[in-house]
Length: 120
Image 1 (spheres, rainbow, N blue to C red):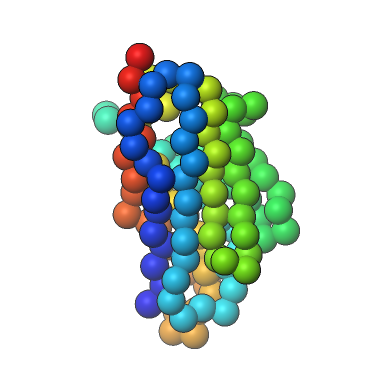
Image 2: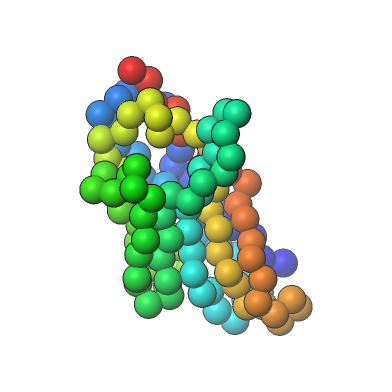
């Protein structure tokens, strides 16, 4: 069974930084795209940043220039470096990955989410 586990969330003051990690574990052949999404109270889940297996990245306009997504394929881990945080970044952040495994083939997986709270 493939699992994605996020870590690194917490409470930070406006202007501060946090680094989120997403580690994939379980029986798998390979990981294709990985990404970060977030959902604020009363809002729909939105894409924050994605990265392909080859390292191509995409960002939401609201985080361009402040957030950076990366991955370590050997460690099966994705990262989200968040700088210059503001109150609008407060949300639960979810990791997403498309994974190929012996039992399910290619399938999309989600982590359990990690809370990021920015205080002003």
